[in-house]
Image 1 (spheres, rainbow, N blue to C red):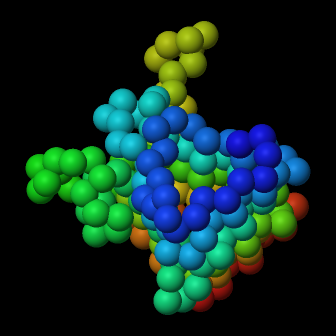
Image 2 (spheres, helix red, strand yellow; image 1 turned 135 degrees about the vertical axis):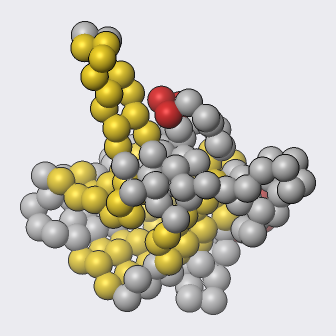
Length: 171
C-alpha cells in the first residue's frame, strides 16, 4: 500500500491473498469491526504476512474490535472460504504481522491463528529459517494494549533489534 488507505466496515471481511506492505509514511486506517482474514496456505513459505513500515491506524473499540485471523476461521467474518464445516482454523494458518514503526498502537483487536512462516536458503539447502510468532516488533517499540492475542503457532509477540521493549498491557 503506497498511499493512505482506509478499509471500511462495508468491505469486511478483507481477504489477504498475498503479502501486504504498508509503506513508510503511509497510513492504513481500519474501521472498527472490520475482519481481516489471511488466506490459508499449507506451504510454510507461502503463508500470508502484513508488513507495517508506516502506520496501522486501528479505529477499533472494546465493543467493536478489529480482527486479524485465518480464512478458515468462520467465527469472525463468516465462512469466507466457502467450505462450510469442512475446515477449521489452526495455529499457524498464516504468517505474521511485522511492525517496523514505533508510532503504531495495536489496541482493542483480536489476533489469532497465525505465527508460522519459514523459508529455505538456496545457498544452504538444508537450512530452514522459521518464524514462529504472530506479531513481530522489528526495530520498533509499539504499544500493544487491550488485545486478545491467541492461538499462535508458538510466540504471540516477539521483538528484536527494538530500541526499547514494546509496551504490552491488558492483553
